[in-house]
Amino acid sequence: MFHAGSLEFPAEKRDHHAAICSAVPTIVDVYLDRPAVLTDLAGQAAALLGSYGSGDEAFLDVAFRSRPTGGFTSLRPAQIHGRCGSQPL
Image (cartoon, one colour):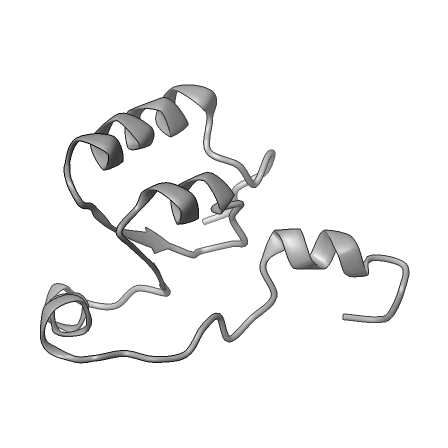
């Protein structure tokens, strides 16, 4: 599957996400089939997970049963923007 265009969610999707996150504590799992700009979601969601096709059981285990630690294992688009031209990725 190939996607082209902006790495950001469309404005109507961002507004929809913001409405949900402001109404109830929300855990957001974003399927990362390509880089995505998640700045708005990171500030709104109670928890933000990025997955590469994990199953429901694995997601629920991380979200509710384990105590995950750590951070992103890859560069986020916001980081890439600051690094372009300064060093190879």
